[in-house]
Length: 267
Ligand SMILES: Nc1ncnc2c1ncn2[C@@H]1O[C@H](COP(=O)(O)OP(=O)(O)OP(=O)(O)O)[C@@H](O)[C@H]1O
Ligand SMILES: [Mg+2]
Image (cartoon, rainbow, N blue to C red):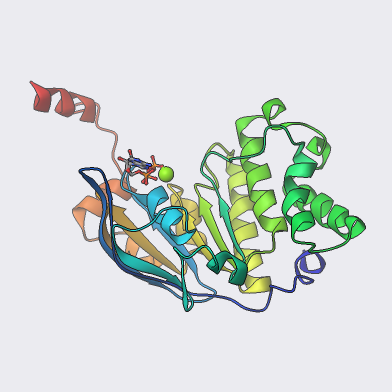
């Protein structure tokens, strides 16, 4: 992989992310409440939390796709909400739903950004694209269109597209959802190897406990739009906080199932 990822003019510089008192309202609803976090340069920082807790919205603020109601997000010294920051910092976001261009083949989805930014000549781009597809076991799908792929394949193409962009800041939204256990482990290995080789700062939103505990430098748990805890993986193996313990290690209880509790609450 090193030859594939060592040629970019962007590689070599890496950025931390500072989030200060970030609050986001959508109309009357507060989705993020006074979030402050410091992601260090070169760190693999994992964000976990229940569905709807605000993880994707938080990532979109870092990517400059949402603007804060209050507070700020900085990438190094740059304001994430300022469109010109994208000219300074090479950032890639792997969207939760893939967000591939449906009219482009897998190959052209991957080649689009390197072509636009002239990261290499066409032969160089081809080599880079095919090598990245190979890493993700997608080389046979290079001429397929997104509608012809399985959900897991689309997911991998979205990751591959981010990797060929040779980013300095990589944001992954649920990179292993819809993937089988072996491919999930492969993705964890890729995230860790890329960081090792290029010092890329990686922020990973995930529900995948194995991924989080095996590759994170630090983990933040977000609940109801607030930070509940930040720590190292070891802090979360047997968490003292019963709310976090129940989130990370939920016990299936047939005698007192959760959906019955919900029904009772609504009676
Ligand atoms: N553009 C938007 N307009 C209004 N509400 C939004 C918008 N985007 C997100 N929300 C709301 O913000 C809340 C948090 O959404 P978000 O997508 O960040 O959740 P999440 O933690 O990523 O959940 P999941 O694990 O299911 O992906 C949800 O209640 C969602 O409906
Ligand atoms: Mg989400």
